[in-house]
Length: 118
Image (cartoon, rainbow, N blue to C red; front, top):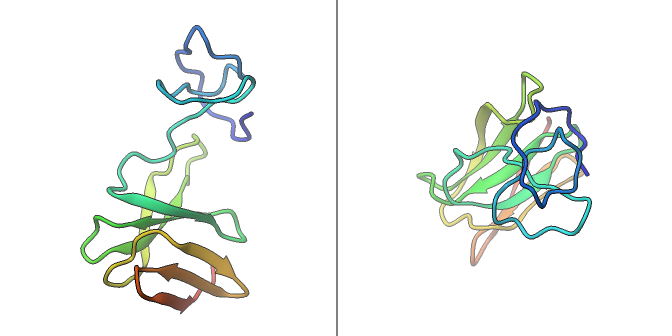
């Protein structure tokens, strides 16, 4: 299942999803599903969330300091070419959520909250 229109690319012989999807070698998926790369430049990506307006948010643990990034596909090709730091704090590692105008992220010991307006 793919919801974004993306350019056709080589497919694996075992892939049974739509031809517009790019197969990620080694991905274990049920029949009818496929996987594709959205961003390969976020080092230490861990937590993911989708904002109310559809932006992909990711915790970048390897950033200095660790950060929450907004990943945007501005040209509609199905890959994020814009990475914007929207929050950072020491020790961010995986928890991430957006709710009622706030962004929440966590470290091993702390839950952080920032005002968030997409």
